[in-house]
Amino acid sequence: MFFVSAMAFSQTDALAKEYFKKGAFEKALLEYKKLYKSSPSNINYIYPIITAYQELEQYNEAQAFLLQLMERINYPAFLVELGYNYQLKGELEKAQAQYQKALLAIDERASNVFSVGRSFQNHSLLNEAITAYKKAMVINPNYNFNVQLAQIYGEQGLIDKMFDSYLDFAATNRIVLGDVKRAINEFITEDAYNENNVLFRKTLLKKMQQEPDVLWNELLSWLYVQQKDFKKAFIQEKAIYNRELRSLHRIEELAAVAANDGEAKVAEEIYNYIIETAQDAGTQLNAHYNILQLKVKHTNNYSDIKKQYQSLLETFGDRTETFNLQISYAHFLAFYLSETHQAIALLESMLEQPLTPMEKAQVKLELGDILVVQEQFNKALIYYTQVQRNLKNSTLSQQARFKVAKTSYYKGDFKWAESQLKILKSSTSQLIANDALDLKLLITDNKYEDSLQTALKKYAKADLLAFQNRNDEAIKLLDKILNEHKTEPIIAQTLFKQAQLFELKKEFNKAQANYKVIVENYREGILVDDALFYLAQLCEKELNQPERAKQLYETIVFEHADSIYFVDARKRFRALRGDFIK
Image (cartoon, rainbow, N blue to C red; front, side):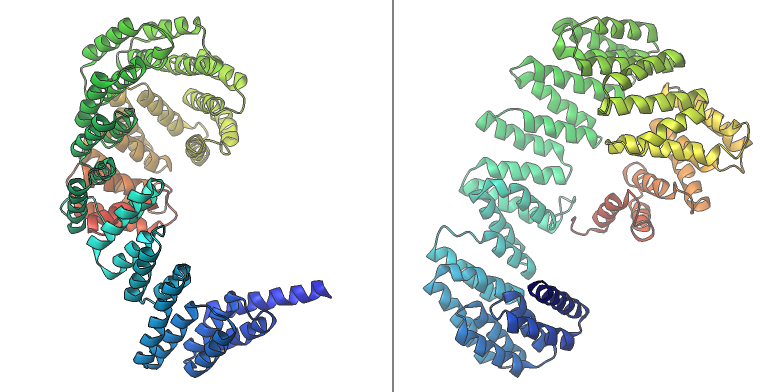
């Protein structure tokens, strides 16, 4: 009997919630009254009954219910509810009287603020909520309602007071700094001249003058990063480091952010500062390594880069600390100078050193890649397979399996490649899983069109040329596919691949033309959202066409809600429109 009763009670609760959610307040009220009768002190039934009465404009019934309730339960928040009910009836003096009683209840017991303040906020009685929270903090200095006050000031549009309250909250509890940043981020943009950005900066500078604290430097640095003004952020980070002599980790992070955002000169300046300032060789070496990665990516002075690699290896030797540098140097020799034999010799000598299994696997993966550059596919497959077998279920093992599939694809062995890619679709590494799925779709979509798989073989060869850093040859071969296989489904993929190679060569107008063809002629294809996003990025960052970029991001937001680019597109669209970034 107890079980049946509990089941019926649960069903009534679910039914009441469903009616309430749908706005069927008469039915909801009936069900909630049944629940209230069984549990007359349950707040989860009391509030819906009050709201249902008010939604049905049965204010007298709500009033009677509240008065009866208050005779039985001493809960100051009900004073706010009664006052709000009077307000809905238009009896404003009576409403204010109840609000004052609720505020007086905080004088009697400061902890009453939690329910009273929340009730005021729920009914958008913001001035009363502010009074309640401030009163409680005076009575009990241990209370901190700065975050609630900040939220209310934000609703009222009092942005200066909102910033002040959030900063006061962060100053008393550093653990919440991430939450404070997220809240403030809703009110600032990437535009340094935006009114709120200027206001926040002035608020921080004022705080720095009144009560010096590295917290204000940290937040100022964070603001400059949001505005992509990495030089100013660097100034703040140096001030923090000089004042507290913490680790250089924050400055290293800033350099990485600047580098990822394409600000190579600023990133290099920061890394040079790290080299000059760091006390340990490991940090210095890592900074040198990152500078070389920037130079490889952004300059063509390969002979100078080679000298810098050699100088660093002579200075630091071939010990454990230079492991990544040695692999990077081998990669540079093979892929940028075509000195594959020298690169292989270096890597083979590394395998003779006392390395961990993971380090050996990294060397073998790089060796395999260089053998692919030499088109010694079978030798490459041996190294990849060794890694796959020796480190089962690791990310490196999955990476090796993907390289096996990619090498088989380069060879034209599409069947074996496909079998490996099927396994990788469920890889624990999302990046590997996505790459595997993309390659599998490419093979599957194009292997049946031509029994000889001519176009797919040409495309795989072009892909290999791109991997070998022979981009001009890859572009020419892709042109051949576009001219000789015009009616085949591989055309969209060919246009996209060629566009990406044009971008690497900084031939942005040619890349734009390719993306446009995909957007205009392959609207139903799987690459349309990719083309839209890359075209938008191109227009925004390289072609100085912000309005066109905004239109393209908007298309992704409204027509491709399931795209992996949706979140980034929405953010960029709002930023270009001048909205607050969320």
